[in-house]
Image 1 (cartoon, rainbow, N blue to C red):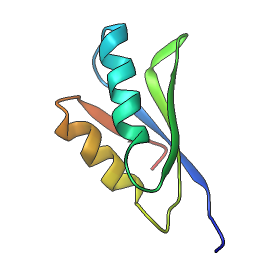
Image 2 (image 1 turned 45 degrees about the horizontal axis):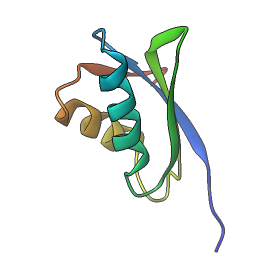
Image 3 (image 1 turned 120 degrees about the vertical axis):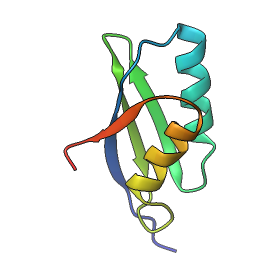
Length: 77
């Protein structure tokens, strides 16, 4: 089975504590179709998500972040 990989940057609208950021990263990583999610310590408002676009859409990822009570937007879409 061929795997596809795409990535998207999600802008986090609010400042989160370290624990909250790591919890959010872990939650996004557990979404089926997501390969990894990470927030850079120097750009804490940006989360890079690598995912399979055949399994999940970028807008669905954004929706799942927002469902966790985090204000967010897709960058570049």
